[in-house]
Image (cartoon, rainbow, N blue to C red; front, top):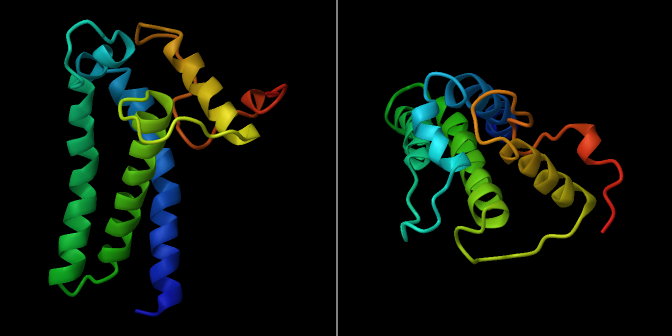
Length: 154
């Protein structure tokens, strides 16, 4: 496989994962799997535990990436490896932006300051303004509605 094809498959997978994550969040997490996701919207900060039932989704989303990495490494379907790598890269980005930056579950870095980073925070804040599964907005992470980019001063 040429390096161009490898990079294209990997970047394509990263980009597609935003749409997969948006769809899963809107239609599964705020649908039939709400019982896993609900504690993320109604976090009990007094329990002393950093674990949420919502964290199960990490395993759900990691599984296709792991399968693609293994299948691309140990079968003739080598094209699956860069797709698995792209899924894994998106997972790392999601973890760093969502869990570390937005929710501050880990204190690794605290302040990104750009028009885009403020828009991501505002969009996620709008999503968490609701504690029920209905009537939420902003289900994605990296692709934010342009309304969150407007009037986005310091």
